[in-house]
Amino acid sequence: MVRNIVVLSGNSHPKFVDSVCDYLGIPPASRVLEKFSSGETHCEIRDSIRGKDVYIIQSFGVGSDRNTANGNSNNKSNVSSSTTTAGTSPVTVNDYFIELCIMISACKTGSARRVTAVLPFFPYSRQPDLPYTKTGAPLGSRYREGSTTSTEGQGGVSYTFESVPVTPAPHIPRTAGLTSGTSQLTNSRNNGLSNSSISRGIAICDMVKAPATVTVTGPASDGGNSSVGEKPPQQQKSNDRFTTHDYENPTMAMAFQQKAGFKPMVAQAGSLIADLLTCAGADRIVTCDLHESTYQGFFDIPVDNLFAKPLLKRYIQHHIENYKEAVIVSPDAGGAKRAAAIADSLGLGFALIHKERRPPSKNQGNYPTMMLVGNVANRVCIMVDDLADTANTITRAAKLLKREGAVQVIALITHGVFSGDAVQRVIASALDRVVVTNTVAQGRHLEAFQAAADKAEGREEPVKRDRSDADRRVVGGKLEVLDIAPFFAEAIRRIVFGESVSMLVRDGD
Ligand SMILES: O=P(O)(O)OC[C@H]1O[C@H](OP(=O)(O)OP(=O)(O)O)[C@H](O)[C@@H]1O
Image (tube, rainbow, N blue to C red; front, side):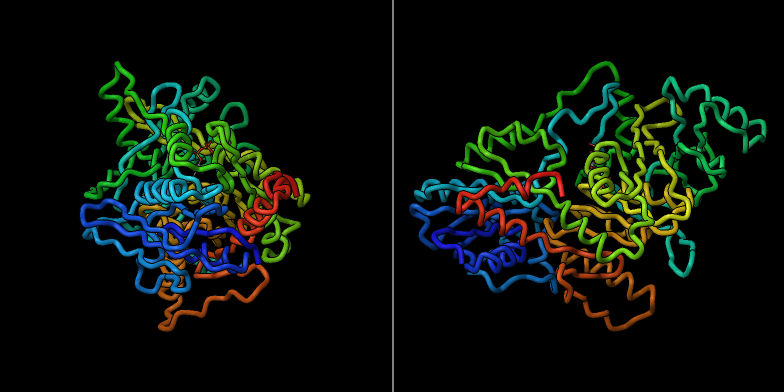
């Protein structure tokens, strides 16, 4: 048991807090954390914090398991209230952030000796800088309501090569290096020469089926038969007011193009978030797999950025058959270092998908292109990334990998945010398995994945979830959730006793 510390839970992920407290051998502190009908947050800390070392745990998924009917809500903590009384407004990442700041401030003004904010998933970590490309193409866009298209079965598994709900339509790459190649393609297509080879050994996978060292694909809209130069799919109607990181949606790109001539001022949220936490009174931050590790530089207090790598590595070794024959894949260049580190430490092959977002053009819109570097034919692909938000990246990468001959695609993701229609997109995708940690609450996601699996297999009674193994794994359909709470508990224990946490934050083995 760790003494003389106080662990406080925000409303975002109380089950995770219980898990951390189990490891530490202490109960979570009692508090009231609720909203007035106006939407303002009200916080009361009911245990003494005077002179104590306080750890406030708040994560930042979309919504919380607590608010669902069957969603693993925890009744163990001495949490007096987490109900929302502000009508039916959905709880957002921003609500959780304000909650966290208010709790930090309450502890500070209550004479806590030290306040550590523990953020298993750090919010706004994808916005450390301007979310615009060098050429001015916006990376933000409106969230679209999804729809389902027909699926095609392969090997008894039903999925579509499409990211469903749809992801963007084909794009003709226009870099200096690809211009001539794509022009050739367009010309060839117009001349009916659909299998012509492309300059510089680069192949568009919709056009050329022969294996290539480097493969480029634009998102197809017809199950893999579309060709470069086709019109994009029609935009789906949406009455949803949320925005996401769905920068692949061309709508905003075209809107931006119409207003060309000036560059809008876009907030640099990264340093503001850091300032707000520090200003509220945080003395230290503990988080995990920051999207940009340089984000730590925005703080002038210690930041411990834990790595999920040991957990993911252990999963590969224990739960992927013949993993030594597998290939580790990074679905974008930003995650290459993380994925390559896992490949190196396991002695596995490595492949890279380069995701390019192009500026809008008159005819094409802002459609991303994916290039595969490496050979994945007849191999199991283990895709490693820090984050699945809209899940466009992993579903489109899975599509490309299957087209290139991968026999199985398994995604290992630290933070399974799954915002908007991401769960449905993953269910309908070519991904065979998605493994995430519980830095973000996964109860609702597990239920959705399990329900989809039950429906697909005609089961009336859901299969009991398995959490019997040493990894405390929970399985629901395609989704598997790994418990990362012990890492955080160990980090807290080491901080309390003044021990080194470098073993936990080192990107090594
Ligand atoms: O599920 P999605 O909405 O597709 O988002 C997930 C992707 O976003 C992040 O990368 P980002 O696109 O910011 O690029 P980077 O890694 O190059 O920074 C992250 O590393 C994932 O690859």
